[in-house]
Image (cartoon, rainbow, N blue to C red):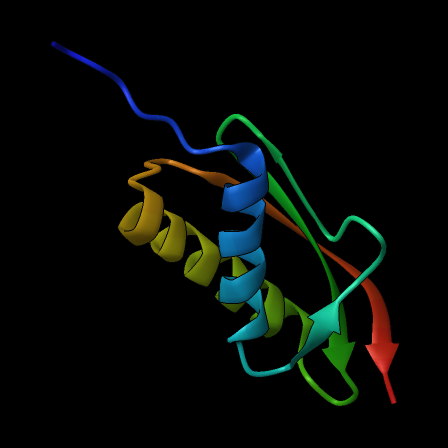
Length: 89
């Protein structure tokens, strides 16, 4: 019997959120729906620590989320957009 497994967008969003929180300079995820997943497109909304380089944090989050999804869910070529909604003081 052959079968196929799939991972729900909610689980992928949880993985992406966990990966983003691990990046230095990320204070927290932002909003009621901080991670949106549509196929292999991921959008992560963040609150960044005061004084952190937004560009560096964004790049690190994008790379970390891609790697985490590749390792944990075998999602290749994920497109990741990072949106900084706020800066924590």
